[in-house]
Length: 400
Image (cartoon, rainbow, N blue to C red; front, side, top):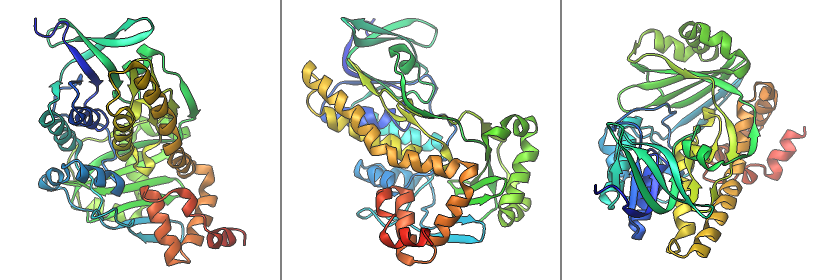
């Protein structure tokens, strides 16, 4: 069989917003890459959909942004955040020529990313599940996977990358431990509505949070609740979802009452917050497999793009030299946690119900200044680090 014993430079497990760009960027470097996914593409998946400006800038740099635009996904250039008596409206500063965010449906985005990988020379196989690893001398050297029909295939590679999500099979197979972890903070339920007219909006009330995200053919409206309420909420998810929107975002609820729900309600109570060991001999993790945080700040897709770029840049042309590869993998893991810790801590603050008063004080201070408001939106989008939000002016306002 052609499949048996073929050696690749890289095998990437998982073909969504972390795995497909990783495969594409390795292929563009000149490596022979195999991309696997257990799903049959195109396929939808649980997602906030929103891609902040840094992520959009990466799509542009990879030559894929026009493909997203061609799907009819609307550009988003206004963000609204409402908490108590404070309402902030604005947009992050542009990154180069990119000033807008986008929120494409995942069955469209993920296919665009896979097509970009294939165009770069990647071999793609969907409906292919990884069941085990090949190892030699303590080093991962390939994967065992099941093709449609159940036949086991063995594929060898110098590097195996796990991009297979928060519950990563590859992470379990290599024994990647969580290096930092915090409790789950929110549960979320969402569905799509035709009719509402919104920007990207986040409302926080006394009983939870509500977000609205315009996408290709509808508006994604999500209701978030404290994790402590998960069992209560899921017992009658539809009623709690509607009540959550009504109480926390009444104006949006009025639009929903006149709109059409286009898909069934979906939800999760498993929004984990962690960093994992992200690399080892012959393997690496990217995307949610390496790092996951509550979806309330909508940073997941942009984080995945950032990690794909970080891993491929750190390895560069050094894949065939074992010592260079090991050092690159070590640097990647260190830099990943260093680059994403700020947004991780910020997300934990947003998702803690008991920190509402602290968030309200911050937003009241930010709202007093156009400069602080711009810095706030830049920080939320990842355009500038959190440290640049806390200016002497803001610190003085918070101490009053």
